[in-house]
Length: 315
Image 1 (cartoon, one colour):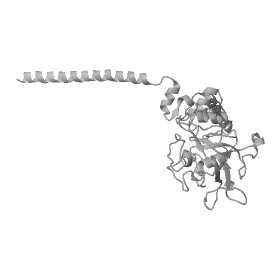
Image 2: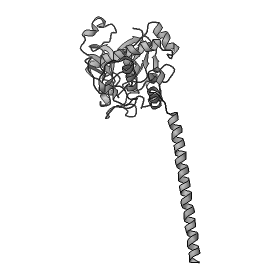
Image 3: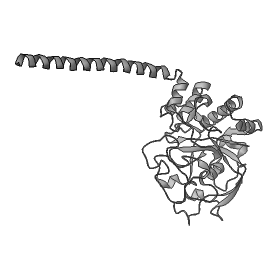
Image 4: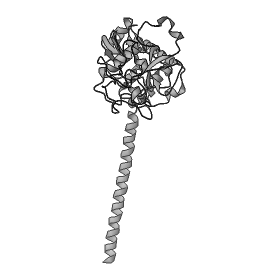
């Protein structure tokens, strides 16, 4: 009896082992098939692989945002209040004062289009790869969907000029953009009045989202850059992202005292020692995240906290 029971137990164990081995074999085969299928579905070209990583960007348009205007947002024509009133904004710096007689001034701007996001590493890399332009190696070492940094003022202008040519020539460029460029508009850096209006709108707010600092609206007082558009900001005018924090942004304005005049020093731009940058960076405190704050750097400066965005405008 014991012997018969032992044989039955042994047979049951053998069957269980057999089932496990069979199930294991089936799993291995299934895993092989699924892996083969997945590999077959992987993008084959570097551009396609980047597109998978950057789903919100277009691989066929130099990794610009995947929306009907390739990330360019209209800022309507009209006036806005530029500069800071220390009675409203106690953190205002002296260089934000409009003049000796006035704290703020009105600037009336024509319509322009500004990029919704800061220029990314992927976008700048597309420029480098296509043009052979020589830039700082560290500019290409960040995450692909982070803002490019360690770029000089001249690097930023070179990217803008290259992008304009691509947009003029590409079959993938949306018709509204083609029409603007055909009418003489340029892709360039924003001047500081365009930048400030885009950041704060027409109600003279202190920050792009309002009058109080908010860590849930921008990347400041932090340790490093974040992916562009990481912070939702429904209160921000014109639907722009990262106008505060992440990286300082170059403008095409020479640094000089307000009041702002778009024609100032236009004939001697190459002789100016410093160029305005705006918006503060990830390593700044809330006072430099304000929309009216004015920074400046020499045109050859390449710093890990300086980047840029571009505009389309009539110059």
